[in-house]
Length: 216
Ligand code: DC
Image (cartoon, rainbow, N blue to C red; front, side, top):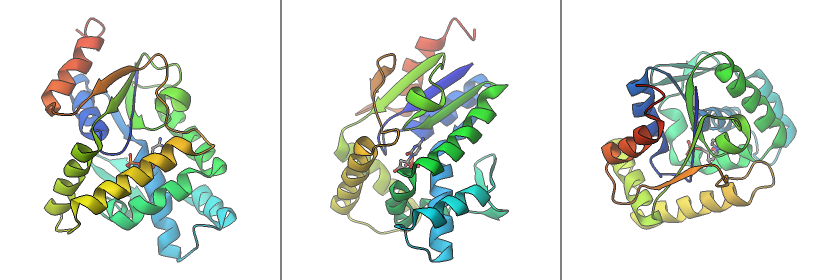
């Protein structure tokens, strides 16, 4: 069974996908974390985000693994490091490189080959799992998405104004929707869920109602 969850930043994709994975005992793959790992590698090397060739080489060598909620890149626990505003900002620079996407998509498809998965990202329903059994597109009002990010950052002690978070989200959305390679799109067979004003439980229930009957 394959479930694809796409949508813009802060729409609630990863929180919801994790819950659905737990509920049905299937693998959850956070594909955004993989792109974040590459951006983190570039920052660690002190490389420039305009040097695509160097970034592709880093992506070729990067070994990304997941253990529960932890993310490892080349043996290093990068769970927290890949969530900083700087990494968020630069991840769209690596995510627009065709070769980087091909490398990561191949790894994602390999994971989904022989086991049930739920993946979240931007190109899951359109590219990675284009034959997924269920495709969901989660969206939410940009102010609410910025508020959710602010809460996450506040909890980590990272201070940022709501307005600057909102501007960053809008910039990332624009990059993700307008890039040439696998832009964020709402595929025709995706079920659209507006998560604005909805609790995590409410969104999970909407999803479960769509897939119930298969996993009862
Ligand atoms: O979901 P996220 O915020 O962790 O994603 C980080 C960035 O990676 C975001 O700018 C979009 C990009 N991304 C992508 O291009 N394709 C994916 N499948 C997942 C994320």
